[in-house]
Length: 75
Length: 387
Image (cartoon, rainbow over all chains, first blue to last red; front, side):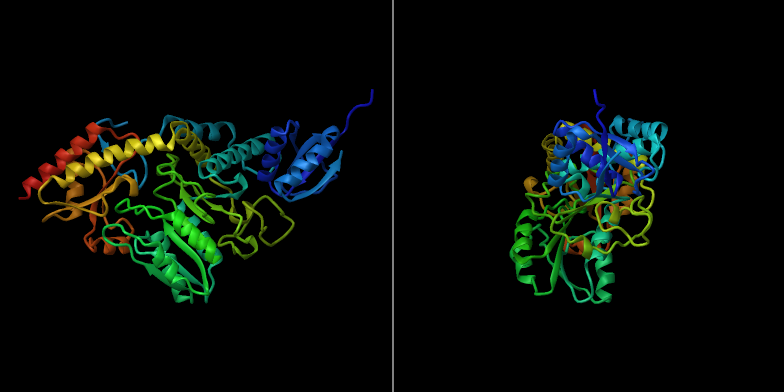
């Protein structure tokens, strides 16, 4: 069995991370707030981690909220 | 607590607070006292989470989006952020004759710098005609700024009708909800408000040092010049202030403990329900107004109609300075109120009570009918002794 990987959504502000976490949760997508992995740049310090399984749905949710994000990266 | 005191100064700062408010402040200090949004360690994240939760509560009570809420230390700072942030020399702004100095002083200062100010009069009986606002519109009008309710007399202005005028004219509406947040139904979207300034320590039952500015979708953030700039924990590689909410208006470490208390206050208000709170306060307000108008030598200023006011009652006693009345109420009766001009000289001119001011009783959710009766008895005695 192949282990499922993770993606992280990098945001511009901590409050944006909590905002996205709430919207993802309302759509039934599990997420976790984690420190930004060292190889990725960001400045607010935390990012939103989701499983790659839920990436397409998560992208739709992010777009629907209108919050500007720094990017999405696989980790 | 001092059970023998009768606290009637809730329009200045509400007291007492629901126990949950102090508990939330303490919990924040003990469990999440780190710097929010600056680091990624667990305490920093926890602090940021609790502040975000306060943002959600504030958004809920005003029907806004959490990211539209920028926290400030009070309504005064929120009003200054909006006024200085958006008005430039050559712009025209419309306001009313019953504003607090938190609006009048920045506008008088900006007037010297080339901002044109029109002040729409409100009658001594509280009549404020939206057509007067419409007629004051000019091609360079950028904003209408109004208090929703006078902090001197409780008179409520017709915000939604002004909102319609503002939308039609393409100008921004900024409201000062210092007196109404938590005590009066407010719906940022339905009332067509673009910028909403509130304080946490009055009707929201939060600690002093909390408040905020809610910024609606029609405000172009690129045009909103931040009055205060500094560290936000975001975009730290740039030496320019970020242009997204709420960071553009929130520089420096926020009052996390206070905001945790504010959230508890707002949740308490939401749980109790604003209509229930308002009904209680207006019932006591009617009792107070009926009692006062029956006392010889006592004159109430402003409007009586309960549907068009909040629970703030201003009055004078013939032959006595308001300060003297206030001192006697405190020392002889344990009744705490506010006297004088209430930081609103323009409003007192409107009501005809300038420069001496008035005695102001402002009712909160914890006041009781028996307390109002005691307060009326005290005024009766003071007025009688003076005759």
